[in-house]
Length: 328
Image 1: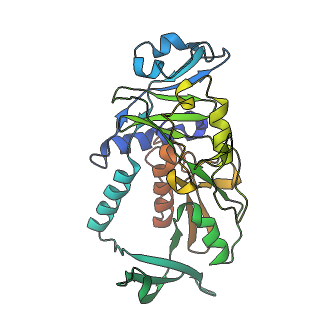
Image 2 (image 1 turned 180 degrees about the vertical axis):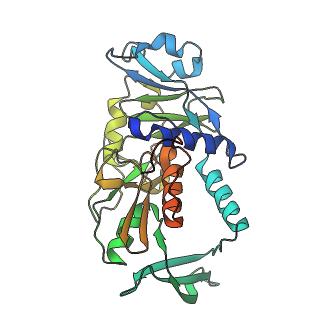
């Protein structure tokens, strides 16, 4: 989801450029302007009555106890899109431009002493008749420029493959399903950090990330009134706290699951170890760079990736800069 909420003023130009690219440069990625409406229990700047904000959206209004969350603010310029379709389109464009793409493979990096860049060991994988994944071929390649773009696994690879410590972290975030009706016109809702994104006729819930998960943490489901669920304890507590304000969360419409495998989830990078960390790229060694997304990757990720590519190519100007603004 693209929104400038939470983006510092000095990064707004990057966010605007990213929105333009999402809308025009990658074909059909289901990019759609969709209001984001955040709900509050108390009034404040830029807040209006919730009943007025949700009046044009009866399906969204049906989710909310207006008495519990009587105030709202609206980002009318927010938008949603499909990141999987974006990744596929970007990969196809890269291949057409001459990039090599190797599927069914895993890679490990290593530094080269007294030289820029590093070594990459690529293992091509195959599956046996007994469904075992085995290494079919191994290739070792020399790279003058090496970019670790492994998502939440990037900092771990930097430390364990390259021996370079970083301050970044990760957290496991689940995205349970709420089977309440939604349509293409339903806005995105947010309350107490929980985002309800309309998707496939229902809602995908995107819980807030409160803190980093410790090294070695294994995601496990929690218990609700003694019954095992697929939601981790931290997420379950957040949802329980909102069940009165958002009554459908307390019904069978919420997909709790019975084990951790029943609820979609993934590791999320936390740049700088912060739950609100902004996307960044970081030089780890000569010719070696780390690229991280994190909680604001939807809004700033493309700009940060472009900035890294331009830096590697030796370009000074960035497309989101004014002509009279010096390059950073």
